[in-house]
Image 1: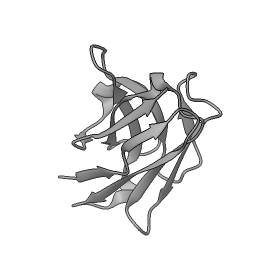
Image 2: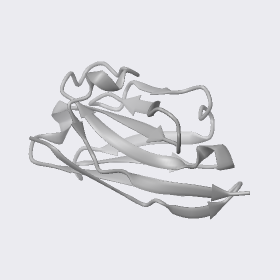
Image 3: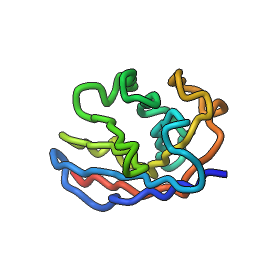
Image 4: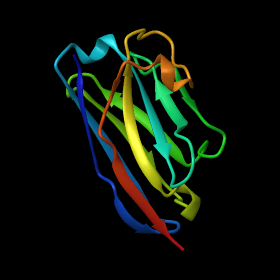
Length: 125
């Protein structure tokens, strides 16, 4: 089992920044690729971005490309989501997820094995 705990969410004005963290415990963190997802009210959960176990492969959904940055620190068992130039449409609950196939990042949430509880991000206009 892998336990994931997100933190860093909150209320921010449009144009502002937040950094989300996802701390993992339970198993060797570097054995997992990590993904960030979000779910806005009334919408399905969607892929935001993901990172493989080394950090050498990182992917983003088009709507956040150039504004969001994913990184990981395997020594600290933590993955990060730096969010800049936030927009009201970024408002959502953000989740991190771990994928046992550490080599490949995928967008399909069904490919992830463990999930955090989520953290709320609200961007005001």
